[in-house]
Length: 383
Image (cartoon, rainbow, N blue to C red; front, side, top):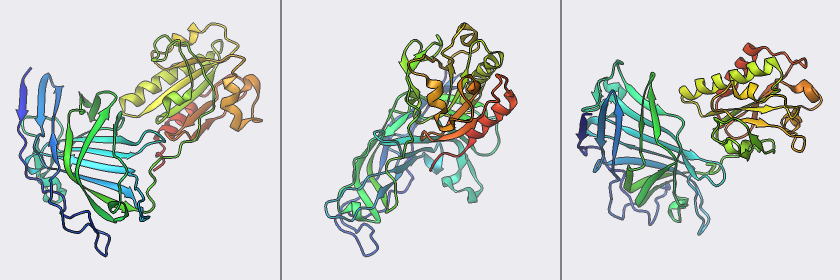
């Protein structure tokens, strides 16, 4: 495979100057300490179109902006709920952007999206109407701007709370910071059906960064607890096969749960549809998880497991009664086996955003169910 290595050209401007020892009347950082431009170390290396491509950002000046929760209390610290980092070669070519947001309790600052500009605007300015190719990158069949994006990223950025006096500034310059993202897996980047996998963990940054103060910044996202149960996953193809766990394993994903019985014809069709929807949304870059819970009055589990490849199928038992726990917010509408074919959708923060009511007879309108799932998956996440 052909390997093309690109040497970065440092043309980006350094971040705004200014010391952190004191602030002016507007709350901005005053001049003082010497500037240390934020620079990148590391490269993006991937395979696409039967070629190996490397974009080396080492030495390129980057920009980074953080947001901190303004804290003017003496000695008080300021947490950081969001950040963005971008780095590019000459004329903004091959721009790489990382965007972070507050996670749930204990998660810290999580990586929300990554963007790679295989073809982008000169100096990042669309108004100039000049597109710049990423030198040496594979020929893109699309016209105009080409931006690969990953919206389901497993990464986190560790940033310690900001100390005074910067914690109380509306705009502060944080000196000589090291920014390194840890990843749980490789990142998949997509653009109009084309994709590539890349390990971004080797790209790090060091230098000055700007942080903007915000009195209303929320540093931890609120999580609404899932229904509490743990059952055995009976699908041999599932990542959790033959282990006992609950919905907490999918925290941070959109989750859809269906209640089925392995002896019910409509339930078998519903289970097959759940796998189809899982495949569809994952292919579209959605961070989702379809889940099936089989009735505790099980007859032949293989009728369900034969319909799926990798989605979990939990086997309910009398001592747990997950069906009842799932339906607790809707108790009184249906009872006992009447809740078969029910559907429940949860947002990434655990809030229930979909309730698909059964008809109480064990039959199912698959089209209506699919439409309900579609609406839940596409509902905007809590900001």
